[in-house]
Image (cartoon, rainbow, N blue to C red; front, side):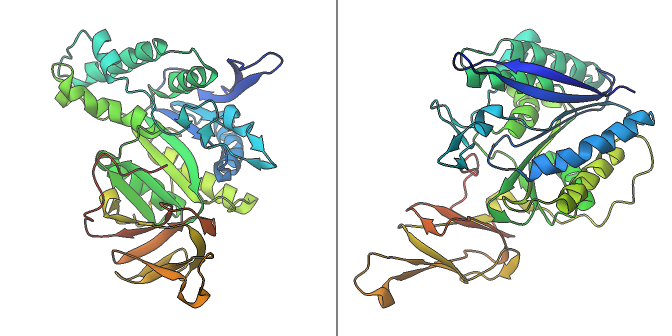
Length: 380
């Protein structure tokens, strides 16, 4: 058996406090493929905690049977900083309270640092260049600032993930169907994960913006093309995705076991676990992220939904009405919020009293939308 559990200490923000990461490791360090999984980077999103709670015993059983082919690293919780943000009885968990912003935005771009360690050139031979790139990325992570508790935490996560073949970052939405974000060049792997997990929506991106954790791990490979000789021949050797496991309240042992089983079968299909995986089910036809309508309020008010999660809607259909509770005449206080595309209403906020500028819902359609701009597709 190779399963071991490590405890990685994190920088403490103040005297008398302690934080650490719990890391489950399976297989042999350096074996390929390497898979990295984490849950609750946004610490108020908990379905992934349940999924990994079920997956770890599955991996332990496979390990006992000698079936772990590569190296698998699992963080059952990724963000102890956010988990500690219990304010007024609620876990905030999405933004660093010290001012550095969204926990899943502005991860470092390691491309320039890796290019320096590669001395500005690669050979053009992927079999040589991919290991060299991974070694350079690990060195670049070692150069990151760890001045604050947040930057130290980010560096620890990247030290575990940056050289992986597969990175699965598990999140959830407010009220939603399960869905996956990944790069267009990883469409087939994203579709396979979705198929094994019964996920209906795969959203493909070219440049989503925001420097999320998955883009930090996957996107650095394509950004090398402008920085080193032969960089344009470097494959995107890390499949990284954001796996959104439905809504915040969709947590149960039944769902967790189903989610874990889907991930497990995907890892078998990717060669990380030996054995014959089930035949891959029909893979969902992916959507492009720039074809997703994000329905936004212009004013604050009380929200009354007119369409449910998972409903097929038409362009112009009313998805919700926004009620101005300060209006003198309540019968004239409603503004209709309409879809700009035909598609599936796959996600909506769980708030009912919203602010101006709130993105209250998402519709995945099949046509490019003028208001969706490459490089600015992700929102907080």
